Image 1 (cartoon, rainbow, N blue to C red):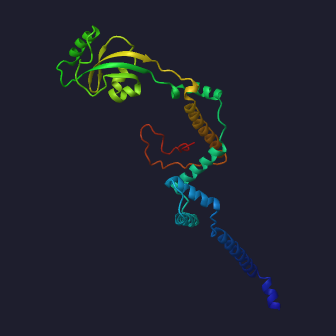
Image 2 (tube, rainbow, N blue to C red; image 1 turned 90 degrees about the horizontal axis):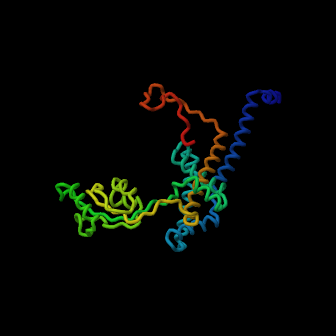
Image 3 (cartoon, rainbow, N blue to C red; image 1 turned 60 degrees about the vertical axis):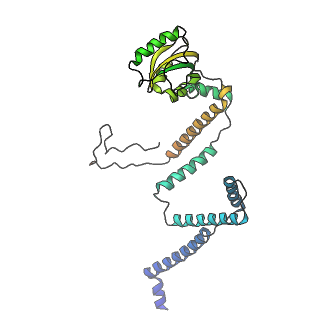
Length: 298
């Protein structure tokens, strides 16, 4: 009995008893956690979502065996995901981090969704961003082509023909055969560039209706050109392009709201970027390698 009392007062015995109690509590807690983490519940809503995804892909409802296979794959994904997280495979993986960032951004978009903007808001947005909505200048013109491979003096031949055309000679039979269009009607700068190239567009875009002019040059040869009509570029009325303006406005607003939300989240973090080794030589035009760069993506 005396020996028992002596053991009770020993510090080592106290330590062993406390350790045993902690081990028991940890074991019970871990068993409960394992039971929770090992339980996978596939709800009716999740089954309905699996069926809906199948229907959108295959344009029909899944058969019973197909739906069962979808559920099996869902369970397999859940098990692999939990095991991968338990093994820490989600840590320090740039692909996983990027996916999680995208998911959070989608959630933030839903949380910060705004009601549809009114006409006054859209008109103001158009005025502040005219380049997004400006209608291109449209030009109608005729052209006569001169092939440099068939002419010893391309410029002189083109200038002689220009004089004759301005005196009234018919242009249909003039010049050399080509696959290029003889006449373009209300073509935009981008339309003309696709057929004739940027060099030709730069010369034609400022021409006014009137006489035959040239020769103007493209990558294919020389051209005489007569502009027959011209519609100057303009900012359309909102009614003409409301859907486009609304789409551009919503894209910009969502990005602004996401950036604002990120800055709020960013304020709660301390970011330390360790300097790179001074042994790395900075290239011309770059900051010193030992200077910590600003945080990317702010």
